[in-house]
Length: 95
Image 1 (cartoon, rainbow, N blue to C red):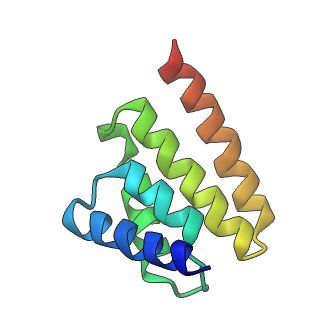
Image 2 (spheres, rainbow, N blue to C red; image 1 turned 135 degrees about the vertical axis):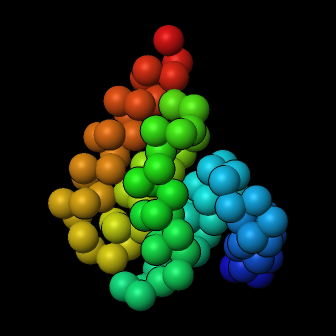
């Protein structure tokens, strides 16, 4: 458990240093436990709205991170929507 907590701190610092580092957002989402009023969730949502400015792989990272956050919050409709969009975007990036 301590290693996950330590990893979360490092990912949080990476996001703080570069808010557009979508891989850090994704990794942070895998270690963080979300609450409805979570500041990171708000930041993810705001960045996701600007995803047209990002590479496809970056937009997919954000979608996967949001899917993880919404899944934790039992907001399965939003989690599934973001997961579908992220997978479609990822496939586009892979081509």
